[in-house]
Length: 185
Length: 197
View 1: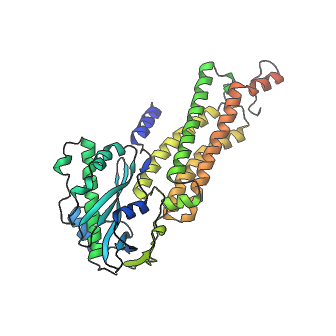
View 2: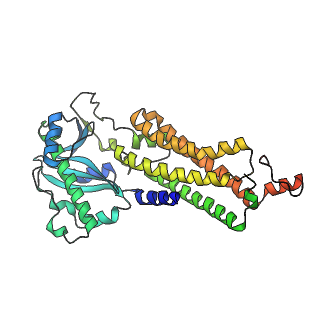
View 3: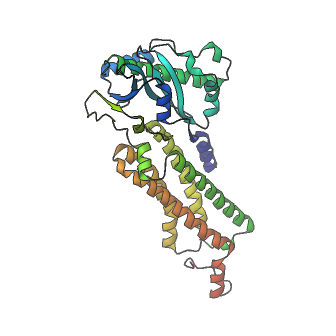
């Protein structure tokens, strides 16, 4: 009996296999379109920067450092930056790449990795080009599910909110790690 | 064990054991393919997915920022799964429960094989030890030293070796009945020896 309960528990808790929709290179090439030179910037956040992000979103950055891929034109001017951000949900990780312009505004986003279980819930969002709802917003924008996605079922809506939160995190990290630290070009 | 041997199981017992062993084998092949495609099968592949991310900019410890120009060729073109600590926790708890249950049922079947006691203990321990080495290796790779990724490969191989030995010996004794023949040579009615293999 206890074995059956354990087996049921394992079946219930099992995370389905990962689904990788695109490589990091493909995401960078797509999201930094127009750039002629590529740079990588790695940033460690200070305690005050971490506190500022937590105050705005409730999320505490806990990575040792954050990596930004920056695209510049031939003259070295910043065209856009991309950062990869991940949320670990009860169904497994969802990882997205977000592109932001030199003004800190969202240019686009793409889902890079998710799981077999979450894919059918996220696919309706991808099909409806979820990223366009956040294009043009900076870190102080409203990162909520837009009305046009309100007719989706509960789980796509849940993941739509997860993705919106991830885009906001990316915008905040970019604000702190790239814009406020100055363009090193 | 206790007078019950694989070779003497009733048909229902033989069918159960056979289908379980074959089912686990199919599952193991699927898991192997999954690991090969999502992570890779070399210690370097495991290290790339599990070890903490190292700065690309040679930013030293304590330094707050680093930047350098790169070519796109320096960014991975492979569709790779990145296993970070929260996913490692999720993976560990499901795999430790799941693989230990599988190892337990494999061991339970193998307890009734006619094999020398020390060899039986050794073989049925392999899937358990392999599981601990596999999952433990993931944590050691992430938090102690990336080179310990070799433990993940070794653990998976031990599990596979244990499964293969248990399956081959069990199926042989279930259907070909070496124990019965061995017992027959010793005299009718005598129980098969635990050391008949």
